[in-house]
Structure formats: C-alpha cells, structure tokens
Amino acid sequence: MTGQPTALISGANRGIGAAVARRLAQDGWALSLGMRDPVLPDFADPDRTHLFAYDATAKSEAAWVAETMARFGRIDAIVANAGIMIPKSVIEAEDDELDTMLAVNVKAPRRLVKAAFEPLAESGRGRVIILASLSGKRVKSEKSGLYAMTKFAAVALAHGIRQAGYHRGIRATAVCPSFVATDMARALTDRDEASLTDPSELADVIAMLIGLSNTASVAEFAVNCQLEEQY
Ligand SMILES: NC(=O)c1ccc[n+]([C@@H]2O[C@H](COP(=O)([O-])OP(=O)(O)OC[C@H]3O[C@@H](n4cnc5c(N)ncnc54)[C@H](OP(=O)(O)O)[C@@H]3O)[C@@H](O)[C@H]2O)c1
Image (cartoon, rainbow, N blue to C red; front, side):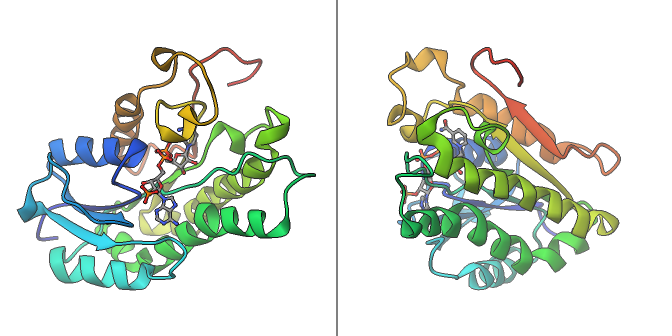
C-alpha cells in the first residue's frame, strides 16, 4: 500500500481519545480525528491530520470514512472511543436514557467499523479498538448498571468484529479500563487523581495492541487502577 498508516479516532478532543491521538501522532500515524467541535490539537502535524465534525448521533460515519479515504487513501486502524456514561441504576433509568447511551456507545461504533470495513481489510492488518470498560465485564455498583448494559454490548461488538474480519486480517480488541483520569471519571469518583489510570498509559496500551501482528490477536484487554476480586 502507498501512503502512511492512517487511524480514525472518535472523541479525539479530550480524555482518552486525545491521549491516543497524541501517542499515534508521535508514532508517525496519519490521523483522522472525529470531534464534535473540531480543533487541530497542538501536537498534531496539519499535513498528517484530518479533522471531521463527528457527532455519534448524526449517522455520519460513511461520510467520515469517505473524507478520510479521499485525504489519505487508506484506513489501517479505528479507535472507537467516544462514549457517554449516565449514572443510573437499571431500575431508575428511563428508556430514552438507555437509547441515548446505546446510540453513542454501541450503535455508532458499529456503523463506523461497518463503513470502514473494506479499507481495513485492504490494509491486510486492519485494527479496531473498541473503548469498552470494565463495566463491560462486571456490574460493580447500582449506579453503573445502565452503563454496564451498553458496555457489555460494546465488548460483544468487538468480538463480533473480530469474528467478521479475522480472515481478512482485521483484529479487534475490547479495551476495558476501570477509572481513567478524565472528565468522565472525575464526575463519578472523588478518588485522588493520582490513583486513577493515566490516559497516556492507556494510550500506550492501545498503541501496543494496534502494533501487534496478525498472529497475536487480543480479544479483550482489561486494565484496573485498583484491586478487585477479578481483573
Ligand atoms: N474515564 C474512565 O474512567 C473510563 C473507564 C472505562 C471506559 N471509558 C470509556 O472510554 C471512552 C473515553 O472516555 P473518556 O474517559 O475519555 O471520557 P470523556 O473525558 O468524558 O470524553 C468523552 C469523549 O467522547 C466524546 N463524545 C461524547 N458524546 C459524543 C457524541 N455524541 N458524538 C461524538 N463524540 C462524543 C466527547 O466529546 P465532547 O468533548 O464533544 O463532549 C469526548 O471527546 C468512553 O467510551 C468511555 O465510556 C472511560
């Protein structure tokens, strides 16, 4: 293939998405960054960075992929990172709150990977990272119940992509952190910031996963900042 390896990252303006964008930029990737309010990050090389006004509820994934292909001619990795958390139990939440979280955490990433499936396959080593959560592996508390429903589905999405793409060189991983020091976690816990996983370390993990060969497939990667019975 010609051109630079290219990655799409959703929610790249802050938190984990921004940390992954910074790390992949350092590694020499061309980046197509999906942001609701697109602003070129200070670390980004304008010659290797494409910005797309991406709202996960707008069903604009095919347009994002088309613009990226027009700009860079290839797509080698997707980091489906944009996500939301509504802290409600499965009993107190209303249907529309579940719908809102499913739309951003599950349906939009599926559409994005579906839209980019052929370029990912043409890469010969397409990589998909689904930012799931440890809440996709266990339901830790009452208030995380509704979010966990969507993140269990996100883990299943990663497995489904792995199954659908395996024979075309696509590898998919559900990345499952506990608390990462971002706005999302700050709104959920009053723990000391230094006790949470640093987004840059999670970005290092994601860069490592993307860099593995086709014969080192990782279906799930759990990262915890604290001791639990499992994970
Ligand atoms: N932080 C944690 O402790 C933690 C733990 C486990 C998993 N995760 C998962 O990791 C991912 C990133 O989380 P984070 O901690 O970085 O969260 P964050 O700091 O709250 O950032 C969320 C990102 O998602 C974007 N986003 C939200 N809704 C969107 C929409 N409708 N369309 C497009 N973008 C949208 C936000 O864009 P705006 O700036 O425009 O709002 C922002 O870039 C999420 O999927 C989250 O569920 C986080």
